[in-house]
Image 1 (cartoon, rainbow, N blue to C red):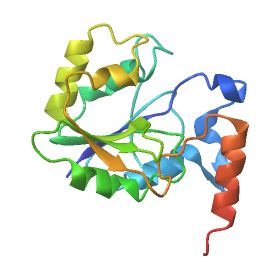
Image 2: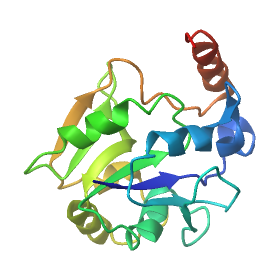
Image 3: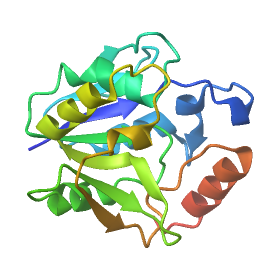
Length: 189
């Protein structure tokens, strides 16, 4: 059992301000792909401008709007009820197989399990957290406006989940979007 927080705000500066969650990969928006990845969640909270989705979600806005991922997480955490919460950016088109792996990897005493790519980069927005650890991390961060997602892990024991299949690749640039579309079109039906 887990809840989910999906971050669907942001300015998409490297995409020239396009509505990134609405971008389609293989005919499905990035947001819908991420929502499908957390379909097993007891509750899903999406932080960003409200829009129509294929299934019910709870919408929140970070304070201030555009305050960044930590402010977005802080806006949503009050609605989380389960002991585990999956935190995902909405621009992860291949994330679905990672969700059960992240949840299964989260074990005591760790507070978080994050995807780590082959180069050792931690994807802070592809993670499963113990809800109590995330709440403590938010409190320790203090002012969440503009805080980096990396700051949340300071003082939190983290389990590194190897991302050998590229589940955590995001769509921050047009090259990323084109690559995701190529990967999706090459998948067997």
